[in-house]
Amino acid sequence: MTLVNLPRQRIAHLPTPVEPLPRLSQALGGPSIWVKRDDQTGLAFGGNKTRKLEFLLADARSLGAETLITRGALQSNHCRQTAAAAARHGYACTLILAGEAPSTITGNLLLDQLLGAEIIFAGDEDPEQVLKQAFDRAREEGRRPYLIPYGGSSPTGASAYVAALEELLTEEAPFHRIVFATSSGGTQAGMIVGAQALGLPTRIYGISVDKPADDLRPAVAALAHEIADLLGIDLALDSSDVLVDDRYLGGGYGVMGDPEVQAIRLFARHEGLLLDPVYTGRAAAGLIDLIHRGEIEPGERILFWHTGGTPGLFAYADQLKN
Image 1 (cartoon, rainbow, N blue to C red):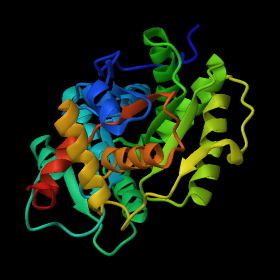
Image 2: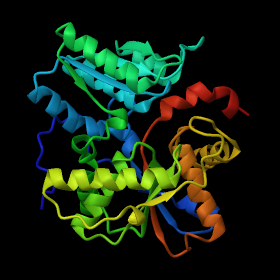
Image 3: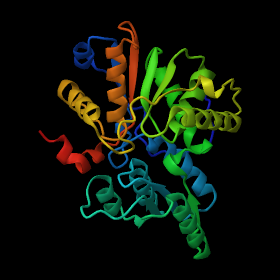
Image 4: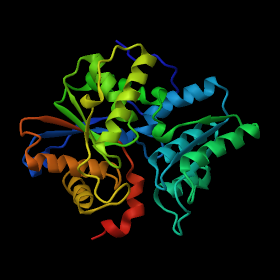
């Protein structure tokens, strides 16, 4: 059965590996933990957005687009992968980044520049409004722009994670729970649709990195219904069914605290596995706490879905060094 029959531009290295984490599992004294390595999708250090870009690029090509335009935070993994996809397939690329230009260029921002993207800093303005202005300007100039929403989380882009659940099912028996970082909601919405369509009992458990659960649940549910409509899949889902844990927001988006630092070090020193400060580091901190609290039981089989973002480590070097 193939759930996703949308046009697709193959750019990701798929399937990504599923690996056991025995030393981490032993250190935490809890469940059996595995990892899905979407940090190895192969596009400019990889990440989950590469899956989404396969479908978004195909849509852009069908519309005759010449310029990809999107937005994100200063160290956006999504923007870095979009810039790489544009370079690889001959598109121009414009990135709208929140805030002011920093004095030091490092991490994802350095890669954005190396990849040749035009970078516009939103400063004090609303990045979404600046994005719309940049899109309108590109259209007026005849550059045939294609707008990719924040995180690539349109129904077309998020359908990639319906396909990802199909991929997972061919690799491994179902897990009790999939734990991952959730923000724009596309990855979680796609997983929910995929799990329900495939009849998987797996709990799709998102650790929010920036939004309160009461805001994120209805947004994920609405996007999941849009994905299901696009793919012709029957979906029974209410926002109360969406599992979002917002207890680990810490100091806010992009603010790395001690829980993230300790999680990054634990994964690195027990498994040689690098996490990022914003997404996977926060999701891993949540996973560790859930195990310590006993909310994840010792007999569970857990999949930690690594969504990438490791270039961001270099932008947080002062906080991570011993």
